[in-house]
Image (cartoon, rainbow, N blue to C red; front, side, top):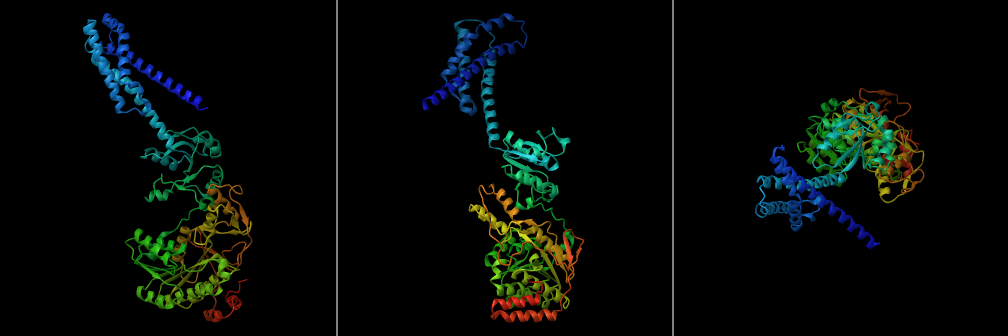
Length: 613
């Protein structure tokens, strides 16, 4: 087998060698003939001299080929042609010309136009080098294209045109635009910067196979989720990576270029339309104010800090009891917003003495209270800790806020506070009840913002699924019918700021979370996003409901009529506030059960939150 293959290689080399020799011999003939034509200005009035010159062609060929061979000019590999190869050609051409002149003038003694021996070597060198460097250029272009990622662009609109224009101009090039797909039939067959629209999105599978597509780019930043969600879900099954161009808002603001692709994320597959917010009230509320964020190192708290810094507060106090989280957000804010005075405070919301000192020193105007324990099954066995942090911690921060004349206190709540079936939800509902009751008695405006699960937050299901996939599975889902509401961390944080700006005191704002998502569907999407096949690569295991979990979540009580606010996706839930005296008595009774068994604490918590089942 080895001998047979080596024979084939030798044969291929031999064919290439003879082809090179044939080309170079042909170049010698053409250069000699063309030299005469140029010398006589493309006129054949002196036909005799021209005919004599042609009779010397065999001599020219023999002399030139001999010297060509002597200087080893035939050994070069054309696609790697270099300056050294050019020098060999120059030697062969010049020495050959001198030898021909000597033979024809001295030995043969034939009269000839002397300018032939100037024109001929120049033409010969041009033909010889052109052939080599044309092959080299073609090889380099082919190699560059081979290293480029072959891209199929979905969307032949403005964003698609901008994307192709940018990647064709980019240095160095990374992408090779192969074709467009667009459902607008009027565009089929048309070209954008030389790239054709070859069909509709339904033709993606065929084109991927025919054109060896390596990447699909979605260039539809303005398309609503009802268009992009089914498209992304369909393309996801084709086995090719999918990227998305930045939004037109990001491009217009200078935060991104059209060619700055991002990978498809789970929020893209969930099909949530981007939120349109009215930033003016938020800006008016935050600019020039001293703002305190509790739980500022957590998922929601840290994003609140990032968003707040955009509006140039006079000072931002970031409070968290987790040292590393506090360090991380502090370092990030210092690098991103060096002009903002950021103060880091390592403390628990239950530590009244430290909180009093913080408020006395900094005198915050606004408080965003995001600190809370949120892990549902864990808190079922840690009832006292849940009550102390989620309820009593809120009460402590709220009372100190009133004492130091904070203008507005915005509490971040959860959908689990609605008809709670777990300790975590019950303690958050208890905190809501206290804030609403307290608002009626004090100058500080207390506002509550309630929303569901946040994608990618600490303790959320998405990071857990990703870890399980990296470990080879199985991905654990509690029940095939379990559903949850989801939104992204930036979206949730922005809506908290927006709702806070709207609130005048006593309101519970509910964020429009869209349609609930089945957890098993979410697991399947994340598995596909990871490039794995369900069951074939990663198994999904159903483990049953954990302590305190509900099959589905609710965003508001039936007795809470919702009113649409002037801001999209922010609604106000009307709920009758309890008498503060009664609420404080029940909280005090709850506090006294800390030296008793958990059953006593849960019993007392039910007295405060009558919907806790």
